Image 1 (cartoon, rainbow, N blue to C red):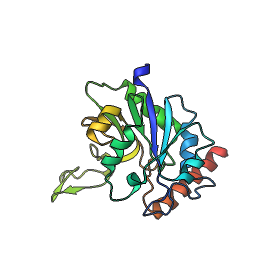
Image 2: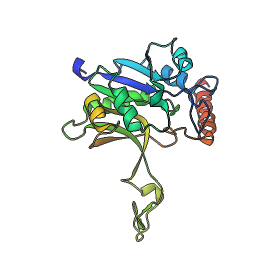
Image 3: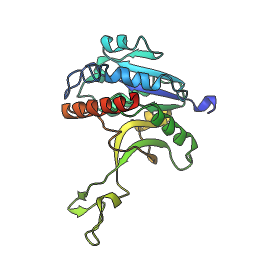
Image 4: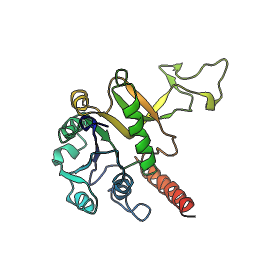
Length: 227
């Protein structure tokens, strides 16, 4: 990757969250979601720098052992009444590199190897066709939209494992140019390349039941790797 095509990993971390109290920093598998994510990506050679932005001094203090740049975010951009499009635009201004990898800490089962594969896919994709990379999982459920089947036919009725062409954005990693992130006020362009991650790996923590499930799976996978 040339100097002009370097990528910054941008990690936005709230000190608190509405649905799971202090989700990002509360104990998780003898660590925290924030610490796990920084451990997963700090040793990778695919990012020019890592920026952690938070309104919380406690969150930023937790980043001190890691080789990251910290940004004290205006608390205005951490409130629920501010749309994420405004947050995306604001945080993109921090970045000096051409590209931004938006990486939440709420996908603990997504590790370094997947991030490396995502960056490899992004750099090798046809940039005349695709303007961004978005991580997704295949939807293996029968969906209706506006009263009509969306991703299946009634006859012949498909097996669930054969359902294809419909994706759910899991936000494990999105890569987009700084320019487009500012102009679109989003981490996804108009013509994204779909980077597929299996659903059980890309599990995103929104609610307490997600937190419990993700922690259980994380501990199980860690035990298997240690054995």
